[in-house]
Length: 165
Image 1 (cartoon, helix red, strand yellow):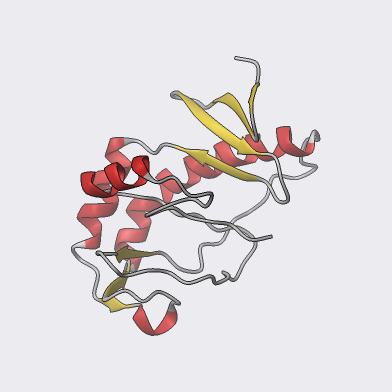
Image 2 (cartoon, helix red, strand yellow; image 1 turned 90 degrees about the vertical axis):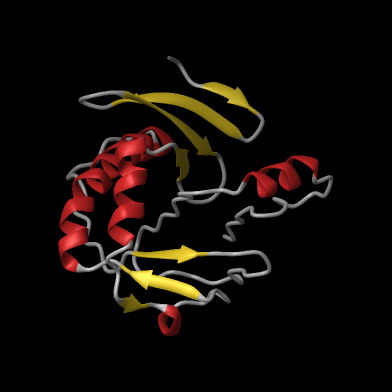
């Protein structure tokens, strides 16, 4: 499907070996994309997080009671799904920059964690190490969806995420 302009977002479907994935590309600053992960990937992240024993609170900016890191065994199960998402990102990046990679990038995952964010907890503005970062929303309470839909302000609203560049 050719890209359709919708305000600041260019919508495209990028081909991958097994499926078509809808990707939103935000036309500002760095290449920022939004995509939906599979239900299998979502379930894997949630199930593997039950095994997490590494407390990440001292390493992160969040004002969140429970932030835990995935162990090596869990990461090995998760990496194929992340690799698939990175392949989609690579395609989006090439379209965004309008040029092909001379050499496909190699990615190293320095950390992987999960935040169990509850009402009144938050992540303040912060930055991440490395060249590429991602956020995956695994469960969004219905109350938050309703609150965000009713929001009339000009920012991203309750439960939203903002990127600074």
